[in-house]
Image (cartoon, rainbow, N blue to C red):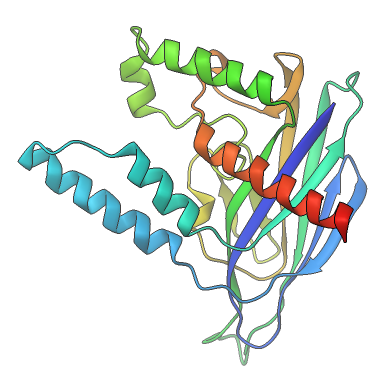
Length: 238
């Protein structure tokens, strides 16, 4: 089956761009430098959330359309990878190695260094009918007794930066996306992101506490598919 891997970093470069190497099941998929990109996503989301909290007291409604627009308008530069994975495989490891030793380390102290935020890491099947079916099931569950659970659990299917990825730095820093939002974590130094993808619903997905009650940001997935198709068409006509 074909899957789409979408990744994007915010990066505050001190002197030298970090290097990323992506592996799927031990096979090198790509190697590239992460360019400088100011994080506009975090302040935009924080401002939106503050407005939501204010509106609770003024009885104004939450705008899902505005939320999706803020996310899309503040995405970092994206990289798209279409990956063919044998349907017989029940487990696959995604591994992203980061080489980032750029700092002014002197006598045991650091005052400047290159920092990254892993803001986008989506992995999903390139199958729009199947994705639409996931959306229908999620919307149906939202109207049942599971609604309260959805309001208190992230459990996002396909979004590895929210559920699945973990970071282990050579400096001892460890961050688990199931506990912290990786998109908000500034990470420095060399290290590796890993995620174990497992077979569920006949496809490979991130591990979820309750796979039957997944959350699903369909407008963002749809945006990724459209952008990828644009790039694919440009390559075919170039």
